[in-house]
Amino acid sequence: MYVPEGYGTVFPYIFARDAAAYLTFLERAFGAEVLGTTEMPDGTVANARVRIGTTSFMVSEAGGPFEPSRAAFYIYVENADQTHRDALACGAEDIHAPRDMDYGDRQGGVTDPSGNIWWVSTRVEREPYD
Image (tube, rainbow, N blue to C red):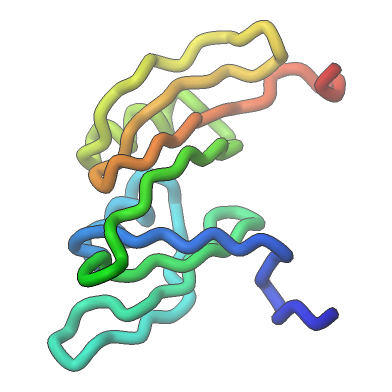
């Protein structure tokens, strides 16, 4: 089986209203890197390949038969508290502030401007999950 370089076997694909603004949110809140963008003739985002850390995914403009996506993502970051603050400053809504969880992560939660949930986590224990 061939999987293109930088893609995973499962490759998330997010549809967002005002995809260009959503890409800016991802860059500022989570340090995303936009690897490439294809635009429609009217300038809207047909698709954009995005990477956060080691994970790549696609973002496209929602519309027509493609309604905005609603998903939940678990993102590991260097500093959950700072990333949570950054996401809120970029327009996310707070689910809960970062706190130490029983399973060894420090985790907060936000809902992004497109309605997706992001569990923002920093691993504080080196042991694997039980």
